[in-house]
Image (cartoon, rainbow, N blue to C red; front, side, top):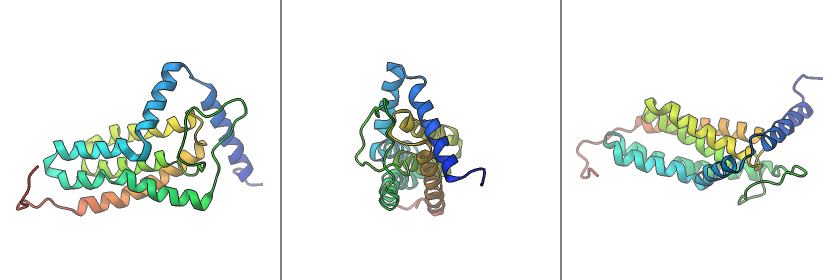
Length: 186
């Protein structure tokens, strides 16, 4: 038997989920995790970061405006994967989830996909922001199993999918150049 059989991975996933659902659960931490998770719904956090980048970084305004759409786009693509995989959300006896979701499907995590897609693409616009962007993406992703909404493997798959999407988007964004003769400068 292979050391990483499907059964082994499933058991590890459940153990990690149970660990995340039973450790460090105080009211302030749960409230913070819930607020962070809510900011990731539909890619809102990443949309806002993209708009802020466009407002404060005129040299890369076009790239930031396009980057603001990556999170919401990634969520749409992620949903197509969820429909194909059809993995239900986790249900741990005695540990109900601490939040709601628009779908009963779990794999991959849309929060992780959108967060890592946006962080990857946006860090191509401003490489000096890479640590902050990926830190925010990681925190966003970790809230999901902490709240009982996803298995850890949903997060890992979402991070990989998001990184692939973000790399493609980042390549496109890097190919764009601002037009110094453009009739606008807002």
